[in-house]
Length: 288
Image 1: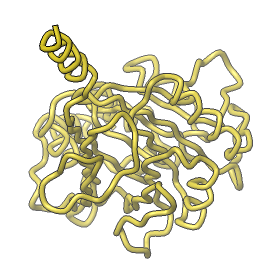
Image 2: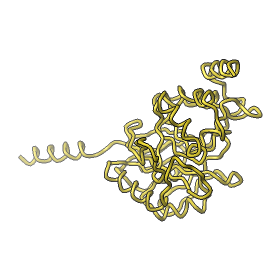
Image 3: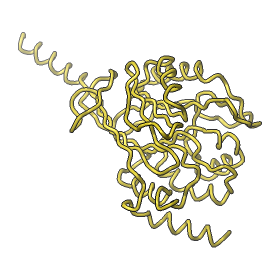
Image 4: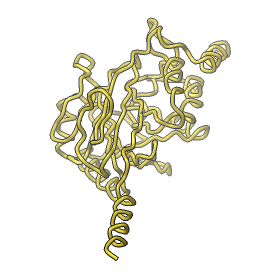
């Protein structure tokens, strides 16, 4: 009987214990519609070539994916990569000021736009946050946009700090294991939001292009700079061991505790251009 009880206890513990799971995510900031390389750097064709290294949606954008005064033709070039690779797209100032282009893309591919504090004035049900399963890890994602200096008649911008706190609570209720905030911010602003929502594991930010891309820790939240101008793509590898606990920066291979590794991969001439995107770029240029 004692042996049987021990077997049952061990069996129950094994069922409850979660194995270490690893997930890879990609992120960009301030892409501004750079579908073609500029000065031999950046460009959608090179970005897609990197994103194709893994299957399924994994790409997150912090905001300003669209260029100012983008045309519908330029937006449509983004359509297929968005439908195949986009995991979460935070609304930036350029998106908020070009609601008609957002409607064009929504009709064609329904990109995963989100914002904790931007509310459309029409009937569009814009997500405020969501949980997505990536490689068996429940990734909770939200985003904010700072309202200062934005002129839009198509969105109402709420105070971003309480909106963020509400969405992080919603992600907890939805069973997220990893909590990520996407935002076009400076580091000092990211530090404030890490205190507003200390549950966040990662704040991926980028507005000050001069500062280092080296991650820094504020409380239990890691602040990861995303670069800018679409010249690089960030690669974030995370290893989840417990249901939720503070992350440590992994050295070498990812271990058995919650850990992560991150790098900014330059989109330069060493990255081949995806031929499918290049063909669409050429046909778009000929039609203009």
